[in-house]
Amino acid sequence: MIAKEILIEFFDETRKLKANGKARFDINKECRWSYFFTDVNRDKLAEAGRHLEEIGYEVRGFLDPSPDDECQTIFLRFDRVETHTPESLFERNASLYALADRFELDSYDGMDVGALDGP
Image (cartoon, rainbow, N blue to C red):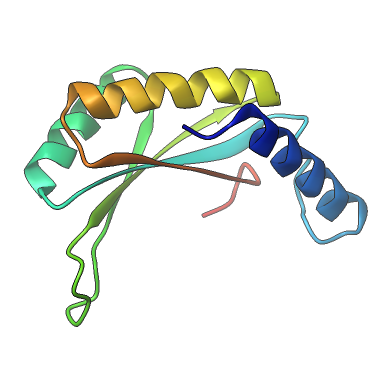
């Protein structure tokens, strides 16, 4: 589980990047939040992806391992445009950890944030 203290630091660092002109989005406002599940079984990830779409996430697709990578972990990226605080993101992460368990995935691998029109 990503600790709330880590999320507070993440928000603080991102605010500094915005203040220094190195980020083009304000983490205190509506942003594109990307979340990631992992597994070696694409079908399990696809099943989770269908559920995620039903509950309002935008499934962005799979990130496959390179052919020469020993680890065959596949990532499923799913996004939602929303506003978070460290506390609300902590709660979102808790629900996504539980969802990964429900679908018996290897892991919920965390999140990233960017501008609304970001990749």
